[in-house]
Length: 317
Figure (cartoon, rainbow, N blue to C red):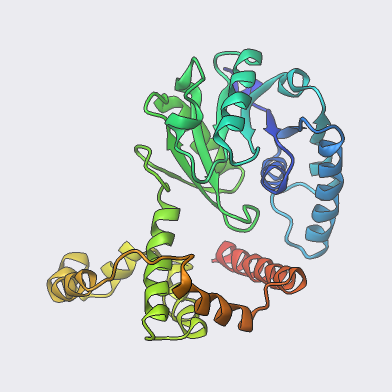
């Protein structure tokens, strides 16, 4: 496929993730057509995106080289799937996180696109071999899992189906890099991918420490936000340990490996996150941040503001 053809991306589903992907792709200069099977939803999504882009431009946080009006000019909506797919080289699916829904969407997509068009799913918890099980040509299918909110948190996990062609991984990696995301490749599929597996390990031990009366909810969050997270905002766990011993990683493990093994073997079983014992943890969290919509929305907005500032800091370094 010539590079002149690689200009149009179709986003299927106009919810939060669909809107976020659209904003990311137009920031990189791609034309984006949004399709939603609910009439009027795609048009509403564009109104919402316009509002967000104008706010971002006002805050000097707009991504890419183009002005907000130039980015919006690249965006269109279609109520007809075939029309939405016309000319696209890449399709990003963003519908409900339900296996049957995604499977049927990809069956519909496959009937309407040429064999070279890349079909990408935004799923966060379904493995590619399930999502694409009803597709005939699976070599052009993969999962591109973003992190919420994708406009500020740039990581994208690229997860191949066992039959995904290497060229499809390469093209998607190049596309994601070009639009300013930070793609990582998984070499094969695994439940939870990489990010959610690492997150689950952190959640489990944090939960156990609170449940066992070792530390409060507030303080375990500070362990991350004022401790580990300070480093992890710029370097990962592997580089962290490599830099934490005079002669690097091997030296670190000689010094601390036995201690780490001892601590790991002392970990308790997977907690029951919904049982009686979890209620006090939930209550403690809700005392800090009440779980009514207004409070949660305010904290989510604060989170996004902080992520925006951090994204800017990372970009400037």
